[in-house]
Length: 148
Image (cartoon, rainbow, N blue to C red):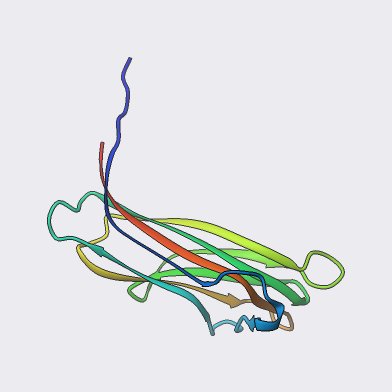
């Protein structure tokens, strides 16, 4: 019997939680595309020696509330200002579901050595709708060296 054994070594980790709870009184309207609302930023360092192959595992959770219509919210993750991941979520408003905790995960493989800034953003792609960030918001990253 053959087994695939995978070894990992943690290179760096970072996490932020700019909003730790649902709070309607402190909501922020998600900007319409092409504008973006920045939700959170983390920084990870990939060392020069023995860092490849590697992967950066990113996880974000965003509390969103539908205010008017059915907004299509595009969430993006950027590394050093370059988009590396996106996903879209429909957010309904009055008369149906209104509050959502949207969670998504991305994997960035074989990142070059150095310091990297990861940013998660949201933008509303649907005219005449509104969705707000109401919390919580968290964003975390774990950089690991992989070897099979």
